[in-house]
Image (cartoon, rainbow, N blue to C red; front, side):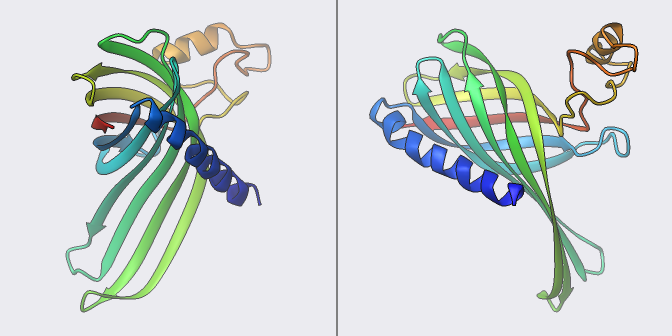
Length: 205
């Protein structure tokens, strides 16, 4: 039930914010490219995704983003096609609004993995697995005049609050271990499973 309610709630909030943002000229659509690691421990290599996003300002220092990335791969025999398409809803916080504006972000994501069995390029069977996870990160946007902007950010995905510490070979891991309590759980920092590098361009209306 939780996985069904959350996507509808995010969509309703986004639809409510869009008209206000559009009146201020801060509603934008854009294209993006992402490098995604789904599981840092099992597979440290990153896969390239392409996608699109919607950004809208809801206050001078607050914005929302809805993004969808897609990656498709087939086997050599062309009998199987795999599609991955993460959908993320994020809250963006801008401490300052200048030509180059840094921001922090956080939100939830729905990650779908679909396997299709093909026969003569026709889908004869398919199976889809979906997973929900929290994410957080940081980035910056460079405005190109009033109607365009370039952005780049880094996101930690599948956050686990109060779980085991992250890898000790990272800065976050070192801090996590330094402030861990007696049970080995971090009192301050969450652990994470994956990560996303994202770059994109937005056209504002």
